[in-house]
Each structure stands twice: as C-alpha cells, then as structure tokens.
Image: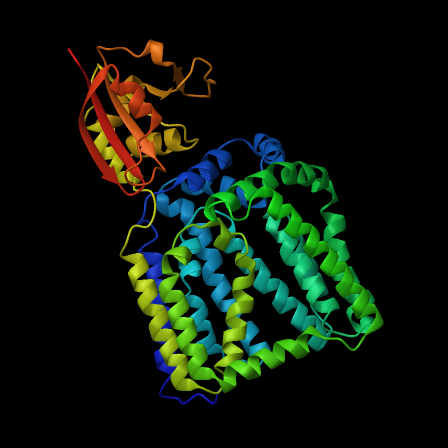
Length: 476
C-alpha cells in the first residue's frame, strides 16, 4: 500500500488508543480462577515453585517471572497484570519492525494487530499468553533476519528456548515454524546447518525439563480432551480427538514422504495463491471477516481455551491480513474502524467472573453465626480471600473469624488446605450459610443448594457475572 501522508496520523492515533485502552482498563475486571492460580503458584519460594511446576501442566518460566515481580511490586490487580501488559506493548513494537522487514506497510498492519480482541484480553491477564505472542514474533523476526542477512542465530535459539519453557504449546509453535520451513524451501536450504542449529539447540537446552514435560502431557491431554468434549457438546469426544491425532500424524508422515520425492513442493506457493485470491475478492473477504467476527465476538472476547492455546498463530494471521490489504488503503481503514468498535465494546463490559463485587456483597452477612460455603472450584477460596482482604482494614481484621468450607454431597470429601470439608450430616441447623457458587449456567441449581435446602430457608440470592451468592438462614 502506498500510504498517503494524511492517513499516517490516523493509524498512529489508533495504535495509541489501543495502548491507552490496554493500560487504563488493566484493573477493569476482577481476577479470575487462572489468575488466582498464577498468584498462588508464584507466591511460593523458587524451589517450591519449580517442584510444583513439575506436577503442573505448564513449564516454569512465566511463573518465575511473576514470582520475582510480585516480590517487588506486590499483588494488586494492576501489578499482577502489568508484565502481560508490558509483553503486549513490546509485541506491538517488534511486530512493527517485522512488518518493515517483510515490506508490509507497518502502520495499518500494526494498528490491526494492536486492536485484536485477544491482544487486549491477554495483555490484561496474569497468564503466559502475552509472553507467548511476544516470543513468537521474536522467533519469526529472528528467522527472517537469519534468512535475509545471515544474522540472528543466537536470537532465534533464545526465542525458541524461551518458548519451550513458557508453555506446553510453545513446543507446538517451535515445531510449526520448523515444519513451515521444511515444507516451504528446498531441502538443502531448509536443512542447512544454521537452521538445524536454530531448532535443535533449543531442544537440547530443554532436556532438563523433558521428563517433567512427559508428566505434564500425561496431565494436560485428559484436560484438553475434557474441555474439547464440553465445549463441543460431546462432538469431539476423547476417542474422536485421539483418532484425529493419529490421522494427523499419518498425514504428516505422507506429506514428508511427498516432500522427499518432490523437492520443489512449497507451502509458500499456496500461501501466495491464497493472498492473491483474497486480494482479487477484497470486498467479499472484508465482508466475510466482519460477519465472522461479529457473529463469533463472544467466542474471541472471553478466556476461551480454544483461543488462548493456539494464540501463537495471531502474529501470522495479522501478517497475512497485512499482505491482503497491502494495496487497499480504504479497506485498511474499514478493518481498523471495525476492530476498534469491537475492542471498545469489550472494555466496557465485564465478560468474566465478578469476584470483586460478589465478595463485597457476601461479606455483608458476616457475623458470629455465619459460615461461608463454596461449591467445588479450586480457586474460589483464593479469590474470596483476595478480595475480602482488600476491602477495608476492619474486614481484614475479621478474616480470622471467617470459616471457609466445602459442602460435599457424600461422606468422603477430601480435605484441602484452608478448607473444611463438611458432609451433609454435619450441617449446623443454627448457623447461617452463605453459599458462593461459580461456573453454573443461568437456571442451574447447585447440588449444594439442594443439600442446604433440607435444613435451612433460602432468604436471599443475587447473581453476579459467573458468581451467585445464596444465603440460607436457620429454619428456627
């Protein structure tokens, strides 16, 4: 795109607005479960953190970063999320430089990248996804630099190694980049000693974590298949997932065999054809983009695992978009305006757990006869504690009087730290129970409500975003 000077201020202002929205609304939403888990995980000693990471589904790099960060800056919402904000801002700058290196008009493409819904959401979340995007951009930038100038090998090795130690999907990102290289260039070029070193060295550096990685996969795959089944209403069951995985491996092997026999085969050729086709049908492409993201807004505007896990693909998506709109300045502005509208809608709505207001409401019932009960949700206790301790000093002093318990539907509950497991036969008919329920759909009733309803009267109920407070008073 030969950009007119009149539009340069427009795209600069848009990028600045994206930065302002990220920064000004960093504490707009309450922390949610995964963020509470990050805080708890990072609040231990370094040794304990490494030990716990071996039993978790994620490598330790991001948690170590947050560990040292909160030791200096504390655990306020803004402090917990600031590293992700910083990673996001650095990503914008590095993405701009990547666009220039690829001869894509950098301002409109960077503006669109800055306005992505996922870019804002994960710039304001105490999780590793903003760091993954940054490292992916760094990896691509270093790879292009290595191919263009034969410089940047050390940068590429570092970026790939950090990706491996940041998230289990970091390995997918590195392997994807290696596969794209192999299937896009002649074998002598793709398998050059320099490129082999760039992708083999990180895995050698990853060897100390390889055994924990195998354990993590053992825990992560059942979690992934469970979420797939839940979010697809059983269409992609664990069996279907593993069958698709086997089919994918077979297809990959066949593709390698085909590449071995037809060295001239290149994914870049097909990629270029797709770009040209979209450019030739730019109005249809624009309408399709706007329609898709309008209909799928809520899918991309929440912390959906099927958005955040493959988030490393976001830079490639926006680079592709930059190529497509390269000669269409007006179309670029339409994309920018549409993206900004979606972003503005997102920052004015609470899309996830409103623990801040729910906790303040629940604390209004606190007295000597009140017990706080939680449905089974691993981080509800931590989130309630977090916001209760930050309300007022007087509430913080009363925290020692608060009792947190989990009501279990049978006699075999499992005690966990800071929790009291309470079978139904131990419910005190003279105590008030404030039941805090999360993750239930509207209209659903918790099994714990049914248990308490046998001995108490439900007197109050109030819904917050993804959290419901139900108050049960003694019948007497």
